[in-house]
Image (cartoon, rainbow, N blue to C red; front, top):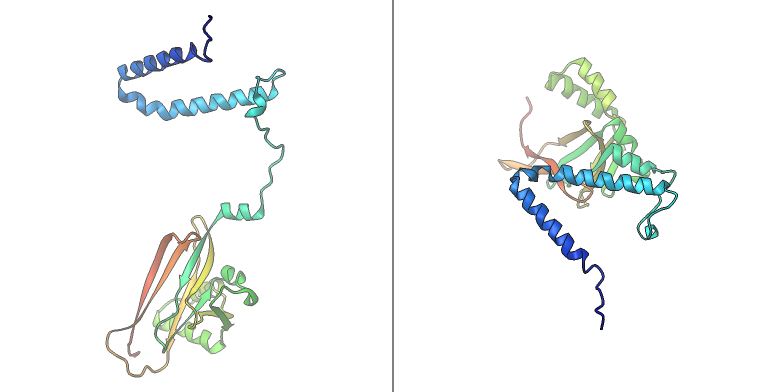
Length: 235
């Protein structure tokens, strides 16, 4: 009775012998070959890509190509959303409500960010109101006199921020997730405005703390700041 030959019965021992010989040769040359593993792998992938490209144009392609070959499209289309994602990273600025009932906080957003916040489509928990002329005058006075800044810096302030509207967090909400789109090596500008009336029954020490957190859209923490509010008498 004739014995049936197993598929690959001869090739398998041969391949095993080649693999063992190659391994011994590499170890004989020392462990420095490990440094070249990445280069060798890249060269192998490059050679495989060249083989696929040549086979694409061959008059007689290799047998069985239909099982693994996928033709590349002649045209590639990129969406606006994809281009925007590649050009700028999207973050979330988490804004909690202030825990103290007598302290109010509002924000001035940059010109660019304010344009992306139409009054009819604000993030949940965010409120918007017209910035009163007297409030802008108070900010200017504080900026120039209290902070002792120059008139040129105030002109830059007016160009940087939208001084027609102020935004605030609804105290009844659990907070606001403000979307920010920031390009590489760029920054976004948000001015926080804290105000109070005449505080009554002020206990010594910290009145309230406010922690702002910047995260990715997957809630991975990127950075943040904590603000501590204390009572003080203005001279």
